[in-house]
Length: 205
Length: 205
DNA sequence: TGCTGTGTGTACCGATTGGTACAGGGTAGG
DNA sequence: CCTACCCTGTACCAATCGGTACACACAGCA
Image (cartoon, rainbow over all chains, first blue to last red; front, side, top):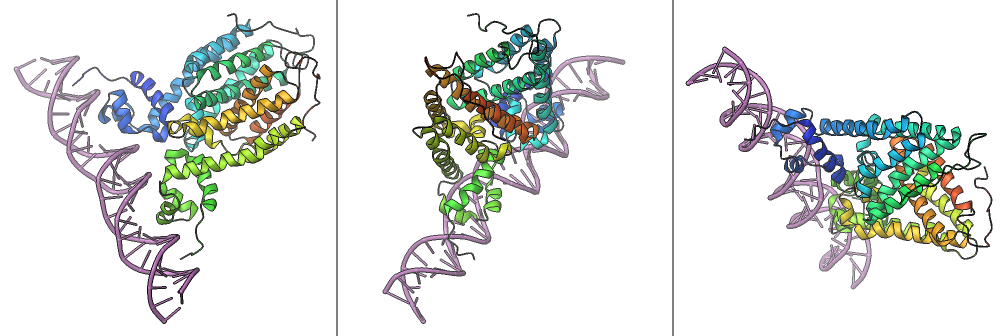
């Protein structure tokens, strides 16, 4: 029954959620059929290579989302701080204020990493690279920009782990606020020569 | 053969490494027998409740290690900065300079968390609490101490994820250096009233 | 109204999962 | 030397794993 022509695009968000909850190996076909509502027949028709292809499709989807919602704003020409603001908004949205964990992070930690090494690696490297460039344009010197970008991306991952370990999204939100602050405050030791000293404070509420 | 009376204490480090690599669910009995050199008989004699008891023993062991090598130095009376230095040394040692991931972190991310919720939670809360107290004694005001402690613990977790994702321990070491620095530099907005301004720099090499 | 081909539910596959039962080996105490 | 018990290798278990094969249902076209 159900001649609604199953679509990969409908399945991918569900798959993403499953991989987040159980990890790649832990997300069983039986759970996948249950949650997606698709039988094995449909599943293997949409993803002939099975779980690996599903995960790859999910990773591609996540990469696309970050490209349009995080990286593009960061690359936007004239106002780098607006781009950084947009990044934090997008991140908070994407991770459901800390209730959701990072799929790529979970893949990175166990033996799943080897299977998706390049995807996992590039996810973080491009994020750091693009953020670093934005920080530079906003007044940070090269070294401080690079370091702050690394700290921010790592800080987000760590905050997700912490929030989940405490089962308390507030931990994540607090961390986000502080990280955001760090991208705005330019100090003597982080500014370019002749750069401005302070960019204002964060959090308008 | 082998009447060497198998000991839990010998098995625990091996089990810890396996859980780190594969996660709780991913660490299979067959792999465990292979790496520990213990047959199922011995394994279930030492850990009657199976994998769950193994993991619990490992968590207990980790907690004990942190208690003596991280928390105790942090609590040490007179010189809080020395305690913090010791903490960073211990952390770098424990995580093999970023080549090893955090067992508790991997447990926190997937559905394993529910099984060991209290252990996972207390691991991070006591760490933050003890570090926060040390920072306070070293000149941070209450709020800054608490925030910095959270940032440091989250930063360590994030750095582990990042280092593993890049397969590059240097990422972890850079992050440790910067986090260490943050625990030493007391600024106008983080110090207690009448406190000292700066505690020196980090990294004697 | 037939035919055709695309999707899909289902039965089935060998392999592996965590766990149990138990016989027997080895050592320690007598 | 014998006995008793602790320990452990091994056979076995049902359940589940990811994946394959295939028959059939249904929509589109003639």
